[in-house]
Length: 362
Ligand code: CXF
Ligand code: ZN
Image (cartoon, rainbow, N blue to C red; front, side):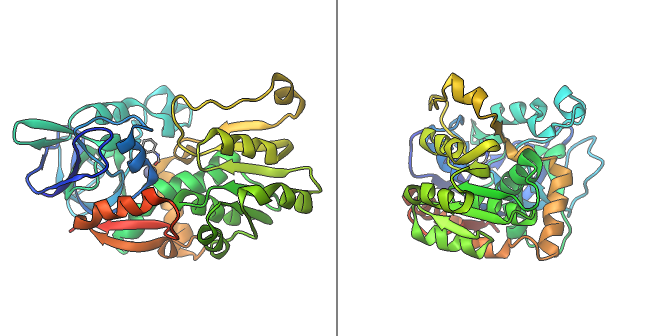
């Protein structure tokens, strides 16, 4: 089958091969025919070493498709089911799952991340984040295949699997934004736009979209932002909208020390700073000991939108059906498998007006 292979960390171009196979589905695993996969910034971060990844491997982690084979012991899925795939399949029984934080479940995620999922002749390949959705088929833990209704287009379902759960989840689950509040969002890519939509769903009255790229600020307005600013203009807007006090919430969707520090600076005393951006392991951010206690701000990390993936995938689809979440509008471009590298290049360039590029696979 076809698969886009990262031969080595640091390589910019994926090798498009047509002679890759998956491992066979083992107990409690399923094989999925991938139909669509979003190109997420974390795929680039895997390729350039910003986020941990193993090579050689197949990249892609925001996908949806159809169940084609069921391993022993799988009861809740059948061949033909439409599913999204999750990079954190909740085991349902570990301490994280039991305390209600299934987004932190390491049981399947670590195993899937570190054990080969594909083969090329005698060589074994990993699947990025335990997935590898830039391939015609993937084998995943059954707990990480999330059923969606047959009428949901695969492209729409794919977006939910990473960016939408991460962004909308950060607002509803992590920050628990209250109606009438003010929210600043720093970074307006696919996840940032999802945060903006989440803020609108939560009933925020002022939604400030911050991005250096004019085209992205314009897009943000279409998805619910009430105001926009470049990073340089943000202080003045804070002054104008909050009399200098700061926003109730500031959400970083970039993951740089400068943007995280800016999120802190833009938040009012007693407000909430949320870190969604997937930053580097050695990128350090400074806060003074005094400001940390004096300002009574809450700093919340948000991994995978603090989501309960089964509950919240269904919830995102309901928001979409109700016209509350514009997912169709987030798909800026449909690419074929052969254009995966082009899509990655466009995302790498950064100064574009695309929200999500979706690769339609088969
Ligand atoms: C990432 C986080 C690290 C594993 C892959 C997915 N999140 C969003 O892209
Ligand atoms: Zn992602």
